[in-house]
Image 1 (cartoon, rainbow, N blue to C red):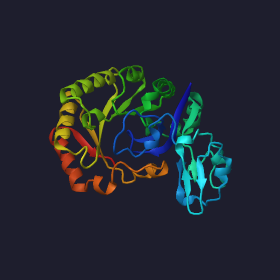
Image 2: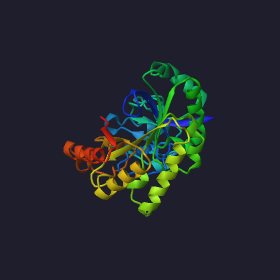
Image 3: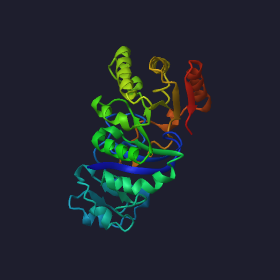
Image 4: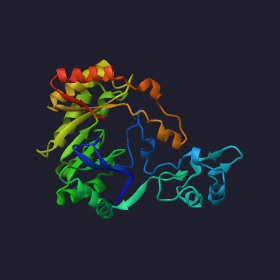
Length: 306
């Protein structure tokens, strides 16, 4: 079975307990305005282009059969609607290669057999065996539920600690088989604070139902995560709802994530405008501290992820 991912993070400490190897899987059903990896939303990433590295040599324009590229004396224009992800432009570019990421042109999405991926990860997983483990993130990892379960199962068989990050907005069936192989869940509770038409009571019922699924594995650790985005997730009524949901479901760990100051990076690479202006979205330290104290006062262990 194949798994589709766009990056692997080595020995990081921000996504799960201890030191983690992270597989960033392709595909996400949620469209968070503060998303910092918009290229991960679809089944395959759009062509990424670092214009500051381009020398306007024109070899990609000659190589592309679909006329995606147009080179002028001053700029390199890309019509991604015509792109079929064949990679010929990347092969032709003297400043790119199909396996690299620091290129003028690149396609980050990788399709790989699950067992082959596990063999590739195994040396690093052995390093973190006692100090951490593997985290499946995204996008939304369990959008590829069958492949994700196969990878989690291999990790469990080799005594590797497993962690899955989720928005909690997938259908229940996507979680049901995975729970027996997951040691820790990083819970996004996106339904609480994304603009939607559901009333608060429906959101709370949906959250409870999914938390009950996660708790089918009695030893699973549940950690809530809250990105602080000014004007979105810091609104008082949404913080109240999240507090109530956490207490009702006996989830007493909350990680506070400051807004990513580089959220516009991948928008530029795919040729789109960022949905938020980071200059007005990033809270200061006092605002973050006040939110942490709000949850601490309610008996929820809130910590800031740096």
